[in-house]
Image (cartoon, rainbow, N blue to C red; front, side, top):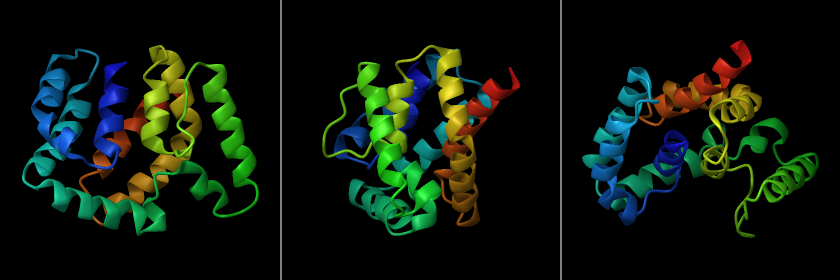
Amino acid sequence: MRIYTILSRLLDYPTEELVENLSAIIDTIKADSSITETERKGMMDLIAWMQVHDVIGLQQNYVNTFDMTPEHDLHLTHHLFGDDRGRGPALIDLNEHYKANGLAVDAKEIPDFLPLILEYVSTLDDMQARVFLGDAGKVVAVIAENLEKIESPYARVLRIIENRGRLAQAA
């Protein structure tokens, strides 16, 4: 589903390519009828914020937000295990799950990185995607709450992911 690919791009480290393609992303968001009005607004607000910054500014903000503050880390198992030994097996299991389902993960990437998870989820049907995200929902909610405390423009996008997972639990 396209929404998960868009969410992945918006939550990944910002590049020149992303900035150059924001207009195309906006067009895709507007044209996709599976995206709710609330989701559309959340993504459009983040994009509007991105459009008033240059790439260097976006990259600095991203590093300060996600890489320098452990409470905002987009590596989901970090929030469950920290640097505990239990994190390794969880990462191996997730990587094996990806492989079994046809997703090749670059050896340099850690499989619990939320943008990578969203790339995987984009290959699933809607209910499978929501169930998969439902499993990560509590961690995503914590990250979203932490981002809201600092009024980060990324918080609303995390809430979209959390809500999509929550909808599967309600079904």
